[in-house]
Image 1 (cartoon, rainbow, N blue to C red):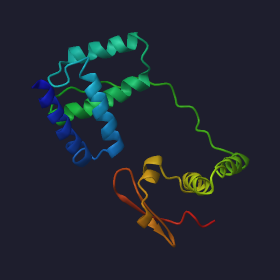
Image 2 (image 1 turned 180 degrees about the vertical axis):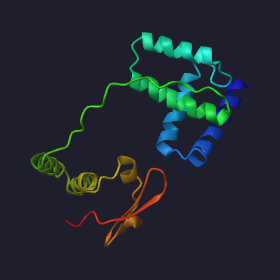
Image 3 (image 1 turned 135 degrees about the vertical axis):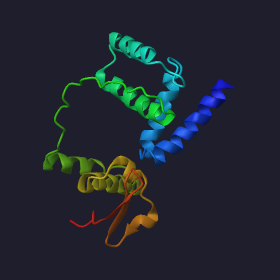
Image 4 (image 1 turned 120 degrees about the vertical axis):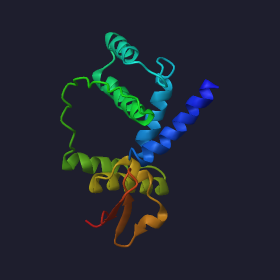
Length: 174
């Protein structure tokens, strides 16, 4: 019964997170997975701050990285807001992110050339995927959501991961 109640709450949380919480679909799926996993270790339905902080302390002692702890913390904070539980977990200090890799023109050309290998249809698809990612700056989740009817003569209709229409991108013109 408790498991059914928990799964029902997770479904309600999914609706809340996508609408009121305004989280992206991929974020919500990840959060639900993580909350389900955390429920095996801590009481997520009726938590005490002491229990939660003790759990995080043990995770830290075991060598869990701050980034991972912060991801768990964000998901639990959203879950607690949904349940109207007044527990706010502190953020862990993370080392600064390394500079992002920005490929040189030569590296871009090599990657584009590498995408052209294989059976003709697959190679064409791969080249288009690589070109869209390089030349438009769209996210992978946005790329996945492109449908055939989104292809236009003057561009491609891109939906953001937050389900808002970004508009037309003239990504195939050079």
